[in-house]
Image 1 (tube, rainbow, N blue to C red):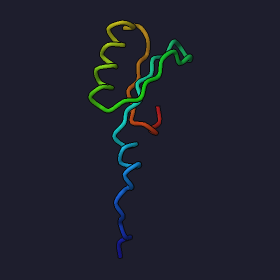
Image 2: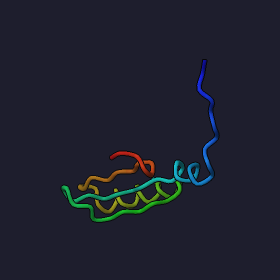
Image 3: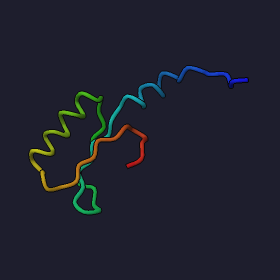
Image 4: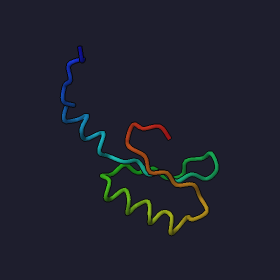
Length: 65
């Protein structure tokens, strides 16, 4: 028998679609932005163009790094 499924609440759906872009200098977080996926991708590209030698992450909001 399968477990019943429920639809995510609207705030959970929004949280799942948001992305976090972070710029790291070694282990130090120097920039952090949360945005919708399209803007996050553009922001990540801009950060890579400016800070190509630094680690830049783009993860789902609430996701593990």
